[in-house]
Image (cartoon, rainbow, N blue to C red; front, side):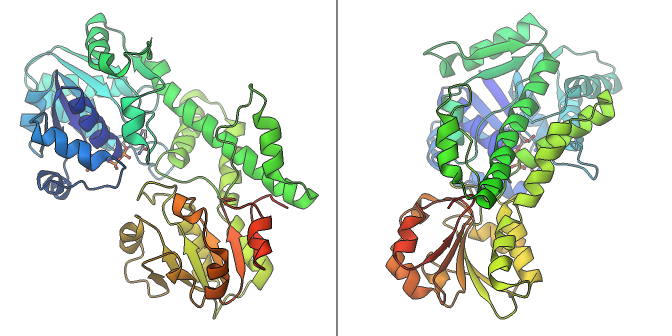
Length: 441
Ligand SMILES: NC(=O)c1ccc[n+]([C@@H]2O[C@H](COP(=O)([O-])OP(=O)(O)OC[C@H]3O[C@@H](n4cnc5c(N)ncnc54)[C@H](O)[C@@H]3O)[C@@H](O)[C@H]2O)c1
């Protein structure tokens, strides 16, 4: 099938590469010429495991191409995926300007039947707006046009995105027209050979499903973070509690890990956008989600609170080693990452920071450009030299089993604040390291 993907970010590029992998003829469009240049030169603009190889393989096979030419991209695909960003605007609502611009561009150029697929995370009612934008552009050309608008939210996880797309738990398709449903069914057939994963529903339910999923996951995290803080005060161990409740199949083990707050490009903005949709479009206050967000904002400061409880509010003259900058492992994405809040708080209290992350340091360099209080090191151990403590912010695999004797030796003070509960507390303590985790004894 001929497929166009509009937007070559984390979602668009992965979707385009995976759709090409199963044999489709895919053209990816982006308005950012720098991204398209990198892709045309054989690189990829983001870090995502397995993606570079897949992109190269499909480019070489002639199934995957990149362009900045809108007319070419609209002419190419019968199916036009919109996978552009939907960042929060000033009041937290999803900013739909990129989605609308992509829809208008399709309306400006299309001259045969198209299925326009909203893959970006968009509020309920966006498909209607996309339809109106396309109709408007067609009308300017004196045309009525023939097209369908489908909602197909994406559930991939950064860091495991290729695998998630190739082996999805479910594929949600919100569509009203049989013709569009048949095309989507055919497109996704190669991804569900084992059993049916396609859930067909009405457009609005599909749009809400994506927000409901992220809101539920964020709720589990904030719930566990609050319980971890409580466990700490009560002298209980949240890890034992996690195992105790996770064993109940109604609860399950997934997504019950306490830490230093959720970040990333999805949970914070999607929780906010759902709250705004409820408030502004339905006159309903989502009280649970308000608390989820408030608890997370506080949790992003939990490591600062622990550091200050140990060293006092004035941290001038102190250096801290940070392991992990990305909002989670296996990605270079630092959008809303807890590390950003922590670093800002440490700076504000007068401290300096040595940081290490396996892939996100170039992104951190961009974010903290010109910042002299932050330096980056070539290895995790190098970050420890002269530091008053090690603070762990991202649970990269390579941090899971350090040589604690060397860690102790290289730190100025043998002290670890672990925002991800990576170690059994007894272990670092057996090396004489003072160890503070989240909700653990
Ligand atoms: N990142 C994730 O893990 C994830 C997972 C599921 C869903 N989503 C959703 O998918 C959407 C995209 O997220 P992302 O992380 O891939 O965003 P991103 O910021 O990485 O990429 C968006 C891309 O769209 C391009 N773009 C913007 N306007 C355009 C236009 N008119 N024409 C062509 N290209 C245009 C940008 O230049 C950018 O490259 C968002 O709605 C997000 O909420 C993201």
